[in-house]
Length: 177
Image: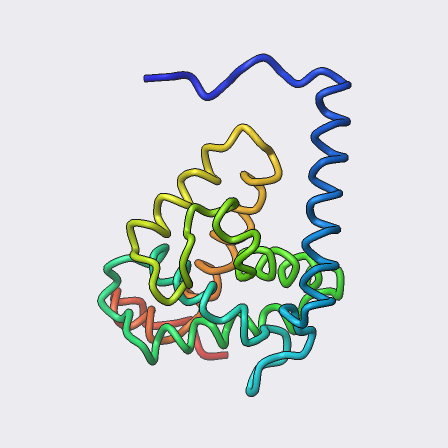
């Protein structure tokens, strides 16, 4: 077993990494905007999530939830709607960070190198998505670990906020007030 820890970055390496990451994200964002790949308009029936975000969220959420007895197309859609509702009630800064992350994951130019998923999210197998999530979770780069944490927490929170997930595990739901 290899150790995931290595010598900490020195100041020069840290500055180079930060400058490189900033330049890469700025280039990707500008390219997406100029080519029309990135829409800021929410998808039909959504308040925050865009058309390009939905396949990403669906693939990751279904992999994170795994073999839950209630997971089917309708309940997955309810979970995605719950995520959209949660984001709609979040601050503009949080919305921007999440949509930037999802935009990076959905754009073909960045999806392959960042996730290892070279095709579309609709064609990604659960094993491919799981490998991507594990790679980000165990990354040396704090930015990727934070991305994994944000995705995992948001998507699992959205899934377990849906009534379909409650009944399948025997939870009667919150008490009526």
